[in-house]
Length: 143
View 1 (cartoon, one colour):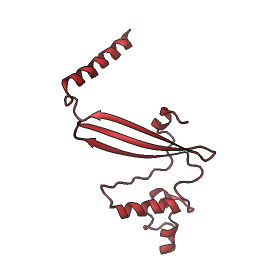
View 2 (spheres, helix red, strand yellow):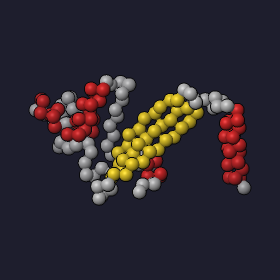
View 3 (spheres, helix red, strand yellow):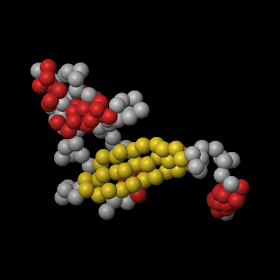
């Protein structure tokens, strides 16, 4: 079972593919995922060359031999996004991690990090509790 520290570590990143729904429509995003799945085989068969501009997966396009983005050496895949909650004035980064073990089991882990958009936005009693916790933490560091 993966631990929380396993999903917070970002070292040894080998394959990165950005899917930006604000800049691309859904059909374009689906084509990128398809190219990631088949290693740009379909895109290469269209023009007859592997280094074709029709290959939308940046990692697959850089490889000398066609291979899918997700293969047997993959240990972790993270899908992350940032959302804003206007009701509470908070930004949240949500990371959904899929951790693969050698037996074929896929562990799922979710990591959410939230921060206020404005430090002075929350009600005074919530801010007072937070600042009290900060003072107690700083005092425990000193003693």
